Length: 78
Image 1: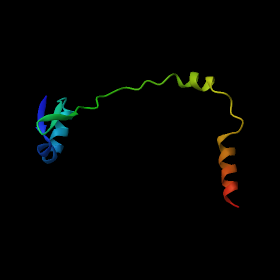
Image 2: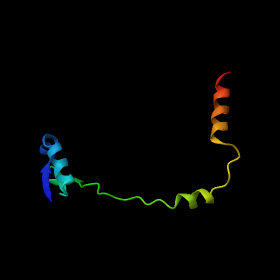
Image 3: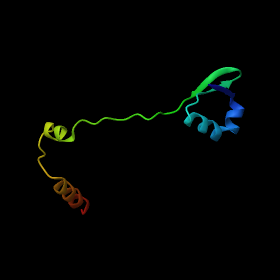
C-alpha cells in the first residue's frame, strides 16, 4: 500500500493506475488525511443461469419480435 497527496496523484495518475492494476492499493491524502483509496476492480465472473431453463420459465410471447418491429415502423409513417 502506498500513499500519495492530491497534487502528486494528479501528476502521476497514469502511473498510479498501473500500480493499482498490478495489485497495489493507493491511498490519496488531502491535507495529510486519507481522502480516497484506489483499488483494482478485480476479475469477477458473472454466472448466468442455464439459458434454456430461463427461456422455459418465461411466459410465451403474444407476438414475435418481427411483428413488434413492423408495427413500430408502421406507426412512424403517419
